[in-house]
Amino acid sequence: MLPDLNRLKVFYFIFKLNSIVATADKLHLSQPAISQQLQKLEGELKIQLFTRLHKKLVPTAAGERLFKLVEPFIDKLREEIPHISQPANRPSGLLRIGAPREFGKEYLPKFCSSFRERYPAVTFNLKFEEAAPLLSMIRNGDLDYALVDVFSSHGEFRDHSNILSIDPLIREELILVCSKKYYRQNIDGNHSFMQLIKKDFITDEEEHTILLQWFKHHFHRTPENLNIVMTLDSHEALVSGIKLGMGLGIASAHLVWDDVQQGNVIPITTAKENMVNMISLVQLQDKVPTLTEKVFREFMLTGMQKTEIQKRFQYIDSDERF
Image 1 (cartoon, rainbow, N blue to C red):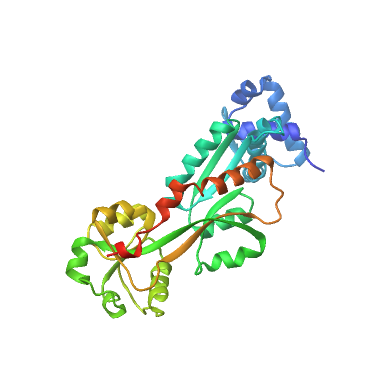
Image 2 (cartoon, rainbow, N blue to C red):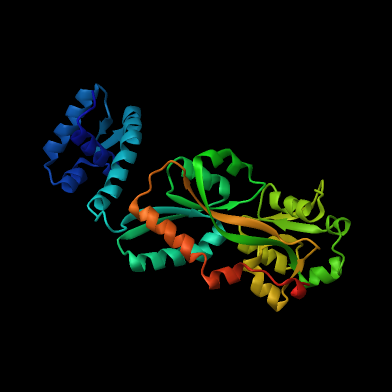
């Protein structure tokens, strides 16, 4: 038998506020009524939930365990109840969106702001993570949508592909770059495989996957070892390290375009076209989307095709390359 839900609510606030007095004020009940509800719950469950010390309640192990069960339910209920009464014919409520860190910080707040101008009843919870945690959050139902780097070497995407729906949004070119000073001292026009693998590298990946994939894409060969002099957890910090002359690194072309134009960083090009990463909008394949989710999906797909955004992702024409 389930315990009385009203008593669980009382227990939740006693635990959260650590006070019968504060709980009584919160629920607009008398202190004796709150104490009675707690005693009845303990009798119903046949366990002691709190140890009574002088004017203080200390949760027992059973109380801690019960709270872990009750807290997510009540917190989720409090979060969702305001949205239940929203109109069914207009987007409203919370959208949970994930994206790669640098791409998300650059573009996602702008899209959310524009979307809320049209639909002010919509709110957002944004998560900026790498592909693997984003896909796990989609699979577990913690996100409604994720903008994910769909890259050929991402095994974690293939593992989830049978349960995901993918809408390609935009092609992101990935280029190997270094500072002008590093280029003159260490590269000086020699873009050969044997020349490059002897140089210093910095990366924002623990596994160096995209660095290795860059060599495979351009030379059909993968180096056994690279001299990784620094690993960071931010693309912005990576670009800073590159401009400081610490070595070569893979950067998103649209994020370093201004630095390339100004000559702060030099691209390492070959006869092959640049490596491409496809940023896609991902959701659970079998999930029935809400009206809000449907409208947001169309908004994102349309918005990403706008000329000014596409131009940012287009790299230098071949006759302009270094």
